[in-house]
Length: 280
Image (tube, rainbow, N blue to C red):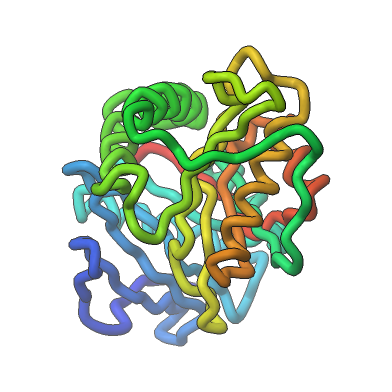
């Protein structure tokens, strides 16, 4: 049997300036699956994605492996420096295939359906983020984020590209519309916060059309870690979403951060997708 990859339609540009194309996987001329490749601009680089991969006939015969490797060749031809694939948590076979092909699990996407605004613990309060401290806070958060990206498998150059893109997401600072930024303070009302949080209140739309908010940064000050303030900051995020009329909140957590994963699970967040990647 001969398995080949053929275009299903023309290549199309994406809104972000990338490119994408759907492909048919054929065995002896008969379609037995499909996939879609995408190239995403990230700070002057192109990062590849296997956005879809489905085998509809003859599973367990290496056809998924063929599809993934064929997609990688397409992405190399497009000039991509790495490839990522988001795999539903409910697809253990696909996750095993990714591992066998040299992909490393980088992060998990979690989400929660919000119902009622949670109460905050006694003695703490939230304040709007002070603009004069925003840049220093973002710089510290970006440094922590960069170290985690390198641990997850990105190169130093790829990390700089990723962090540089994210730093441009607040063009109007703390007053950027559609975002919520707050700091958590203790009962003494001192000048140093316990921690801070940033939520994009409408990152994207879910398939049913409802908005999905996203936790961009949650950080507990080093001197106050291990005291439950991370949980309280997440409660602040949920309250901000509900105040804006948004009932779906998601976030990413790096796969090696077992403490954070346990915290989010205890708050009712469930894993939706797992991100795997490797260098091309």
